[in-house]
Amino acid sequence: MNFKVSERYNCVVIEFKGNVMGGPDAVSLNEKLHELIEEDKTNIVANLAKVKFMNSSGLGMLIGGLTTMRKAGGDLRIANATDKIESLLVITKLITVFKHYKSLEEAVESYSEE
Image (cartoon, rainbow, N blue to C red):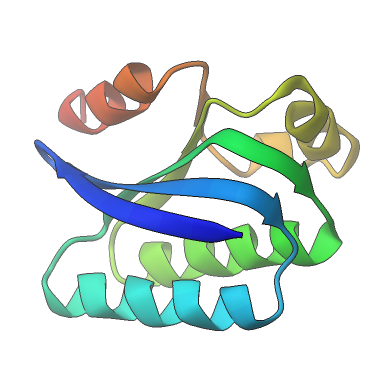
């Protein structure tokens, strides 16, 4: 897995690519989120459009990111979850924890609506 970070208006988009399976990737994501918090950027959108597979550790990584951002007064929202990932979120009931959107644009706009 890898991810790239870009800024859009009032939030930061983290675009994930490949298999999201936690491990060392979780550490690098956590470090990146803490850097963003130091820059006072706490509104995050996780774009999952290019994620092929996600396991429980990958889910844990997203939950950790959500917790980190909420503690800092922000949020982490999901955009473009594939059908497989969306069903994983439903099965684990995490669909009720994350705010999730069908498109990146909707997720980005959700921050300006608040």
